[in-house]
Amino acid sequence: FAVMILVHELGHYIDVRRRGLPADMPVFIPGFGAYVKWTAIGVTAETQSEVSLAGPFAGWISAAVCLAVWWKTGDGVWAALAHAGAWLNVLNLIPIWIFDGSKAILALGKMQRLMIVAVAALLWLFLHEGVFFLVGAAGIYRMFTKDEPEEPSFRITAYYLILLALLAFVLAAVPQ
Image 1: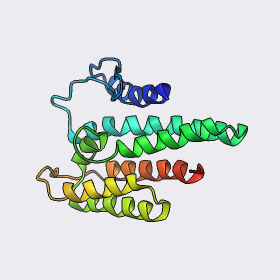
Image 2 (image 1 turned 60 degrees about the vertical axis):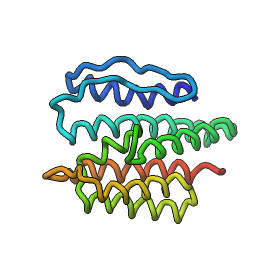
Image 3 (image 1 turned 90 degrees about the vertical axis):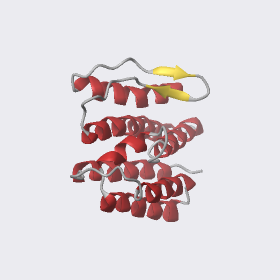
Image 4 (image 1 turned 45 degrees about the horizontal axis):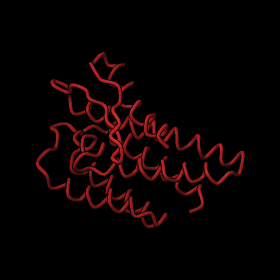
């Protein structure tokens, strides 16, 4: 489980470093999680969004690997890791507070935020995973905050939506 958290954080770290920006290695806070410290001064909202989504993307990869190992071995530990990893990465996409979604949504306009809300609501209805409700509810709140960019990024919108769908696939594939 700790390795899955590390993989998530390395997703942020690698994305920051590949852009030539300074970043510290992931720091673990026992009982709370981990973070990567990096300097975002002078960085566009789109870049901040990409870096924020890189963690959940790497987290999806680790959850998908656990899913594949479970399919191959039938060992329930891998199914539990796949489900927990996917669930925590969806949780991290909630667009408020300290979650990755709070920075990812900065590149989205009101209509793109509505798309996130709609997809999260559909995933909640079909999968009965309450974490998608939280993403949607926070997305509604963010539709009314005054932090929309002048030019919303359709690429970040697609990235966010695809990431929700990929994580939903893992959650749907693993028995609860």
